[in-house]
Each structure stands twice: as structure tokens, then as C-alpha cells.
Amino acid sequence: MRIKSIVTESRQIQRAIALIKLGARLQVLESETDLSYERLLRLYKEVQGESPARGMLPFSTDWFMTWQPNIHSSLFLNIYEYLNKTTDLEEIDAIIKSYELYIEQIKAQSLDPLLSVTRAWRLVKFVDAGMITLTPCCKCGGKFVTHTYELTKNYVCGLCEPPARAGKGRGNVRAEEEAVV
Amino acid sequence: MSNASVVNEQLLQEVREVNLAYLVLAQHMIRADKSQARYRLGVSDEVASIVEQLTPAQLMKIAGSNQLILRFRFDDDVVWNLLTSHSRAKLAPGAAVAGLHANIVMAGQFAEAN
Image 1 (cartoon, each protein chain N blue to C red):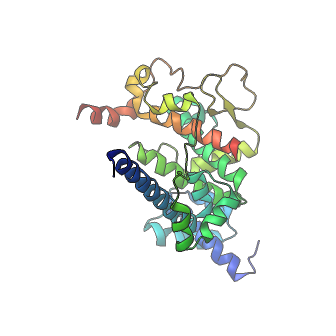
Image 2: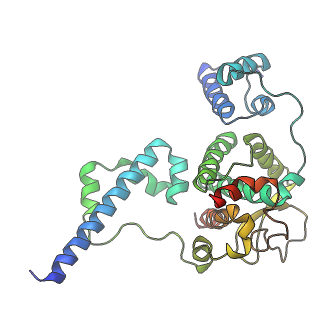
């Protein structure tokens, strides 16, 4: 699709820059703006100072269901749903803003963000496609990312009842090191 | 002047200071980014627009009350328990993410409230 309005084009470039700064992959930019591949590539190099990563995007919904990623994804999706419901932002702007809020909250807890902006974008697309949804936990009432057709009547979230080996994987090395200090 | 009224006067002064600090911060946040500010503050679009438009004189007037103009955003014990590290004991090794539990529950509740 060709862009006729210069104002629209400039808005799209701003949006693309915001996404690149958050670390988005080129496929996200291609899908969310009408800018040509060549221009996006140039923009990417200009903003990041290096060529974008190659290869396919992560495509599985299963990543969002594993313990720690599920917590991070749930936080992001709750923020996104909030912005989506209460404001009339366009979808991609809501994703950018909620991702920024997610990063803020993660940093406030001195954690590393596990969810990349590309994955966050993917998550919203999965929700749009009806493959993933938020299900309330019957214990804490918080809403968590689950598959849409899972049995969710007595769903208990991974934080109310953490799995036996929760937090013992490689991902928590940093937190443990900090705890020792 | 009795001791009690001095203390009382001091408390009122602090209430006014908190009010003013809150209003100024809220206005600053709304002007920087309205939709993100609404998430942080938990206020409706109408309230955000009004606060955004307030003049400094109006801010002072609103702040100068004996009542706080802000209050707790959550009033159920679930969130309080999560915030006060109640659930952290059983999550000892993964305590890093326990802090997010309250965030998730709160974000979800606000989405319903607004």
C-alpha cells in the first residue's frame, strides 16, 4: 500500500523508531507500518547502528505457558487490556505504551524483562486470533495467560501454586546472587 | 496554644502538602502521556482531562483542604497480602517474581473498575 499523506508517513516513522528502540524485529515493523522493507532496513540501521536479526519469529503459544514467561506475559497482557479498554489508542500504540509500562514495572522489581517486544506483539496477535486468553485464578483473582480452550473452571495460577522446581532454573541465577550479597 | 492543636495543625499542613504534590505529579504525568498516566493513576478520561487543565491557583485551592484527595486504589486483603510479602515464604527460591503477583492482580482489577 502506498502512503499518500506525509503526516501519516511521519507518524509511521515515529512509531517504527519507537518499536526499534524497544528492540522489535523487522517483521513487526513490516506488519505494523506501510513503509517499504528498504526504508525500514535503513531506519533500523540508523537507530540501532547494526543490521536487524535474521530468521523467523518465535511462533509457538507454548512459550507463554511456561512458568516464568507466563508471569511476565500475564503482567504485560493485563496492562495492555487496561489501556485497550480505557483509551482509544490504535492497537500498535497500545502495545508500545503497555510494553514501556511493563519494562518499568519489571525494572522496579529489579528483574530482567523476559518478554521481548516482538513476543509481546505476538501475544496480542494470538489473543486477537482467539488462541490465547486471560483466565482468572480462583485463588487470587488475578488474570493469567492461558490457552483459550483449556479447562479453566478451577484454574490456579503459577504464583498461588508454584510448580515444585519453580525459580530453580538458570533464569534465577541473578536473583540468587543478589540475595547472597 | 495546646500541644494537641499544634500537632493537629502540623498534620493538616502535611495533608495539604501531600495533596499538592499529588496534583502536581498527576498533572505532570497526564501532560507527558495521558494514556500511560491513566494506567498509573487509575483515573477516568474525564478526571484526567480536568486535572490536565487545572491552573496553579486552582491546584493550590483544591490542595488546601483538610481531606486527602487521593485514597487507596485497592481495598481487598488479597492485594494487601501479596504486597506485604505474605506469599513470598513458599516461593523462596523464585521470590524474584513474587513481587509481580500483586502487580498482575492490581492491573487486572483496574481494568475491570474502569
